[in-house]
Image (cartoon, rainbow, N blue to C red; front, side, top):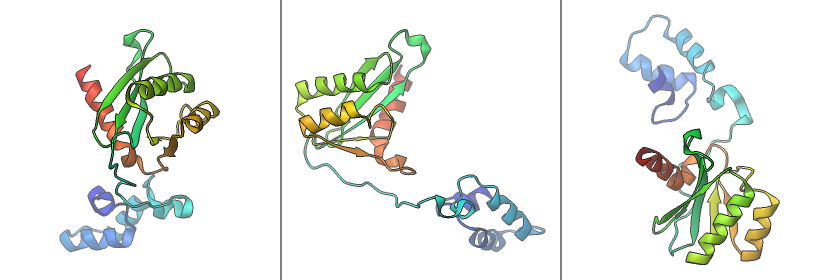
Length: 177
C-alpha cells in the first residue's frame, strides 16, 4: 500500500491508489483499507488540504561560473568531538569545491566569520543558498551579505533537494569521520 500511495507518483489520493492496487491484486474490502491508509498519511496533501504547497522537482538554477552559487549548511558531529561539535559546510555549485569550518555552535556570528574566510580566499560568491535556519536568515548575515553584495537565497519549505549539494556532502563527511 505504501508504494501505491507514495511511490514514484508522489502522495496520491485514494482513488488512483485503489485503481493501482485493484489492477494487480484481489484484496477483500480494498476500498475501505485504501481510504483508511490514505487518511492516516501524515504527509499527504489530500489529508491536509491547502496547507501543503506542492512544488515541482528539479533545480532552481544551474551555476555557470565559479562562486556564482555557494551552498552552505551546519552539520552536527556529536558531542564526542569536544568543543567544536558543529561543522559549517560551504560548497561551490559549479566546481563542487568545498570547505569545512569547525565551530562550537551554529550561530550567525560563526557563519559570518566563515563566510569572511571564504571571501578572503576565493572572492565573494554571487549567491548563498541555504535552508531557513535562524543562523542564516538574521540581521547579522543580512547586513554582511548586503555589504558584500551577496544575494541570499533560501530553500523553500518542502524542497530539500535544492540544497542537496551540501546535504550529500554532509553524509559523505560523516562516513569519513
